[in-house]
Length: 238
Image (tube, rainbow, N blue to C red; front, top):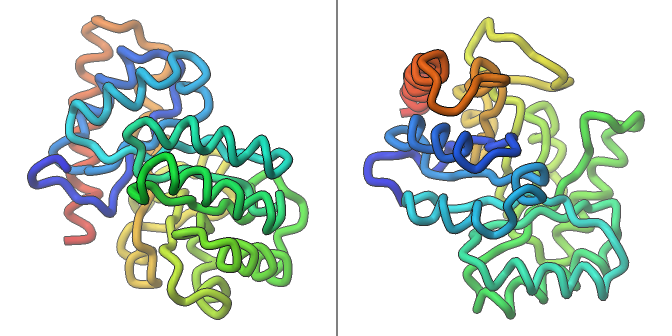
C-alpha cells in the first residue's frame, strides 16, 4: 500500500495505454491506495498493467466482470489469480455456480490473497429493481464472494441481504461535478456514511486527460489537476 494513501479510494484506469495509466496512477498515488485495471487496459497490455501498479505500491482491483460457464470462469479466475491482484470482478447474473467456481479458482491460485467482487447491476441494464438487486446480492453471498459492486443508492437494500459483504461503490463525484453516463452518482462523504468500504473514482478525475498525447505539456498540466482532485476526494473522507 502506498504510504499515506487511502485504501478506500480506487482510481479507475479506464484507458488503453499503459504509459497513460502509469501517469494517472502516479498523479493520484499520494491520495489513493487502489488501482482499478479495467477490461480495456487489460485487453491492451494484459498482466503488465497489474505489475506496473503493484510496483507503484497499489493494491490492484481487476475489473473484468467475467461471465461464462462455471468451468471457464473458474479457470480464468485461476489464471489471473497467479498475478498480484487483490480483487477480481465477476458478474452475478452468471449464477451461483459460476460465481462459486470463480471464487474457488481465484482463492486457490492466489493462496487466499485475492477475493471476488460480484457486480450486481450494470448502468446499461433496463431492470434495476430492488428485487433483482437483492437476488444478485444473495447469489454473491451464497457463492462466497468477498464483496459486491453496487450503486450508492442500493447500499441499504444490499445490506439487508448480506450485511457482512464489503460494498464497493462506483460513480463517485465531488459535489457539482458532471455525471457523464453514470445513472447513480454520489459524493464520497455520503457513500462512506451509507456503508461503502471502497469508492471507485473515474471520469470525475480522468476525463480531462482523454485524447491528450503522452509527454505533452497539456497532459502534464492535466495530471497536476488530477492530483489536486484526488487530494480533495481523499480529504472528504478523512
